[in-house]
Length: 366
Ligand code: F6P
Image (cartoon, rainbow, N blue to C red):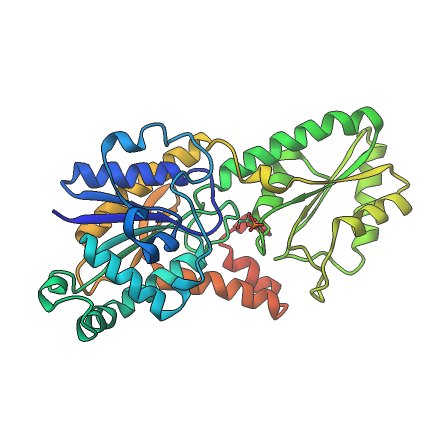
């Protein structure tokens, strides 16, 4: 019986549990055994009861739960070869030679390194007498399949990452709450949203909430943004709008890569437009909580596809990442997807904003 492991790594995201559930149940439905690795790569390195066999009932109720019920951790040990050697040993001990990793680009890069090193790691286990030749013989190749779980929607090659729509939904709900108090006092609110170096959450929240102005890292505002922003805000007020909402992505910066902070934006609205202004940093409410319907659907369909990808893999197949493109669940080359994602950060660092926007695969960023 084929044994498939599943783990969640990096920041949690709503929908990760749905993905674990789908991988476990699809694996069982295909006649495989399913194993959950607790606490991300940490569980792989530690082994023992951090790697647990999962039955159909073990994932009951997972679909709607936020966060990740099997835990996630930033694991320094796995970043070094000795940690990965230990992980390989634990996997051989449990007879697991396929892993579905649910995480962001960093976690998926780590997974592919592990796969490439695998034959060498197995050989080392034998050479150092940790495992016998016959023990490792059935485990010559490691299959890795990636699934992207992140609220940031920052991975190239997929239209949506698992979690991003739950987070967007939460942000909209929070801005609606803010709206009520803002209107009552005719105030301005500067709302900071997450996203790391990616402006997707801020941009989509701004569109969905009818914000007056939006700051995102990929498309910094022109140098005279203070003038531009206040002009728009004041115009909207003249038209009868009783509130002002400015959304600032946490990674926002100007064209010289100087950080644009919520405090700076507040000062401008206060001093130039004479608005009574407050700052709200939404923080981790954007990440926790129930998964929305889209994330439940996405994680379930992708989890099933991930198991199919494991079963169809040959030693030559490059590691795939499961994506959604134009509403189709598809496989893409994991390394290419990670490289494309990292190219966007490079473009931003080089102030090549036009290319950075193209790299986000988001035509509406224009
Ligand atoms: O990647 C998800 C994310 O929530 C980002 O949006 C944010 O910048 C970061 O993680 C926060 O990380 P932490 O929870 O470690 O503070």
